[in-house]
Image (cartoon, rainbow, N blue to C red; front, side, top):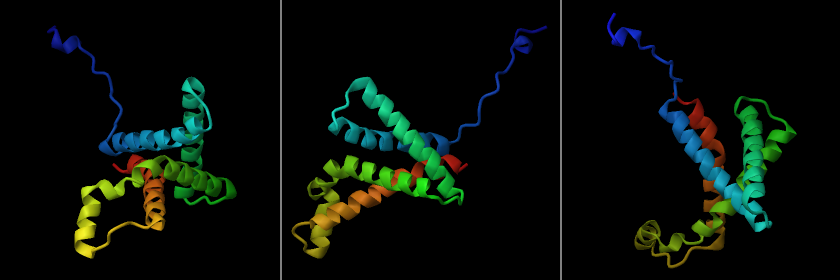
Length: 141
């Protein structure tokens, strides 16, 4: 009997790129949510615990929405998730005028400044993407 024939293969779970990317986006959304709890005065372990619980509840309830089950809890979870994510990305969206993307838009359109409503719209779009993407990526094979 050779040494190689005695080696047993351990079955590995089928983790595709979609699951890995979905988990990464989930962590980014959790970070955005954590910023709210931090602003409320939570620190260290209570902050981590509240973030994981809130993000997990939102993910669970939103999963029902993506599978066609619409109820008040799923809507409230989605609204909370989007607002939490928007709040978390807000500090970054406010800096959009310092980016090459904005300079490109200025060169093309001649706009000199961005209206606050644009900041809000961008924050909500990014927040919605952070709320929707983990489930979509996780389910993608």
